[in-house]
Amino acid sequence: MSVFDLVILGGGSGGYACALRSAQLGLNVALIEADKLGGTCLHRGCIPTKALLHSGEIADGARDAAHFGVNAQFLSMDMPAVNSYKDGVISKLHKGLQGLVKSRNITYIEGHGKLVAKDTIEVNGQRITGKNIILATGSYARSLPGLEIDGVKVMTSDHATKLDYVPKSVIVLGGGVIGSEFASVWKSFGSDVTIIEGLPHLVPLEDESSSKQLERAFRKRGINFELGTRFKSHEVKADGVTVTLEDGKTFTAEILLVAVGRGPVSANLGYEDQGITMDRGYVLVDDKCRTNVPGIWAVGDLIPTLQLAHVGFAEGILVAEEIAGLNPRAINYDGIPRVTYSEPEVASVGLTTAIAKERGYDVVELNYDLAGNGKAQILRTAGSIKLVAQKDGPVLGIHMVGARVGELLAEAELIFNWEASAADVAPLIHAHPTLSEAMGEAHMALAGKPLHAHG
Ligand SMILES: Cc1cc2nc3c(=O)[nH]c(=O)nc-3n(C[C@H](O)[C@H](O)[C@H](O)COP(=O)(O)OP(=O)(O)OC[C@H]3O[C@@H](n4cnc5c(N)ncnc54)[C@H](O)[C@@H]3O)c2cc1C
Image (cartoon, rainbow, N blue to C red; front, side, top):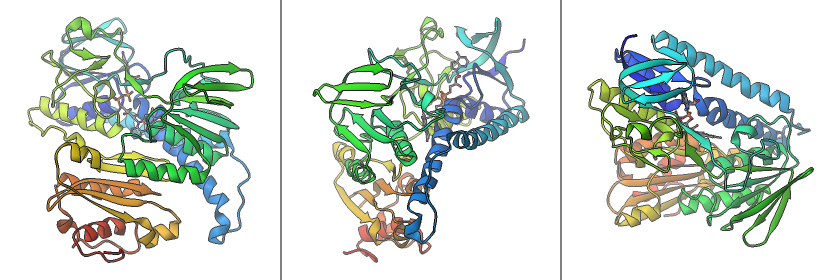
């Protein structure tokens, strides 16, 4: 068998992006996938959760219809129909991706691979050799010691994305992105929801002001949460699950979702045997995603960078371009857009106030309340755009809360990554009435010329 330029282990966001870009650059690529092309994001992550959130948005729209003068009524969720809509989206994207991989002449191999030499993956009893090996085996949903996942009463997001009924009540363990998104979905579907988060805030990696606004909005929606308190034990009974916290409080619900983070898929895959440096199961890499072993690279959730699909895409493309000799620029991880797609959404790029101060910047802040934005009033959403900037310098971070603010990230990302100052952005004209106007207004205000804001 011929020697490939790249042999990629794992066909999720990181692996397939690397395969597509390498093939585009004329390289000879083998892509090995044990399960389904598209990985976590397409089959159990980004896409199914966003489809569920959209069904939830429509349910909320029906509940609120009278406010907008529409005679409609929310009756109930039809979960088989929700799942068929969601699975239809996944299946269409899956087919499209399969077609794309085929059209680029990538050698696609189905099977569970293992690294057996520095340049070889063994799969289905066959040895596939490459000048470069790219490890892209992704991540799995973690649990806590003693917290056994049965997939029925105690589940992870893998099970929750496929649930065929609306639970009466849910405990969500973990108030990060995944926990907050499921809490939002289930509340919209009609469940009683309680989130338990060990840190002092929901979405704790976000700017504290965003976390507080999300908490306020969730409280208003009737989503309960316990913050700064940790899980101690649980008991599964025929009719539900009881969780006891370290502070002695107990909660009972029909199901428990464990959303305490994701760990790297790297056990028994031969990585350590080939001398690859690892840390707690993560493969360590340099700023071009090279491991310490020449010719072996790693991308996506397997390495300790932000666990996001678009980070996997960017890392996969980076590796392809580096191998092709294009000498691409290393990724600036501060400039990666982040969204929690709950209702309301939380979106950000760049530094939080706390991190900017830690890094020694002379920080100025501007908070533009969406109450001053026409479109936000039309949509009946509350929230804000907060700018963190260096005094007389560039914008260092943009933090947003509100319906649909994830869509504003494209501009926020350009502002941050082009190191624009408020004065650079203020003259740009934003269409009226759009939510994006709030982005313009925030920068106008920070540049000292507020329009629809008090100066
Ligand atoms: C519920 C949920 C919601 C999410 N929502 C978002 C979102 O909205 N936006 C976002 O950006 N990110 C989101 N993510 C994160 C995103 O899904 C991941 O960051 C992304 O999938 C990582 O891509 P990856 O290629 O590193 O790994 P994965 O997508 O996990 O792919 C790894 C692939 O490798 C395969 N594999 C593993 N071991 C082997 C082996 N030995 N041989 C062959 N194949 C193997 C697996 O079958 C898998 O297909 C979400 C995740 C979850 C769980």
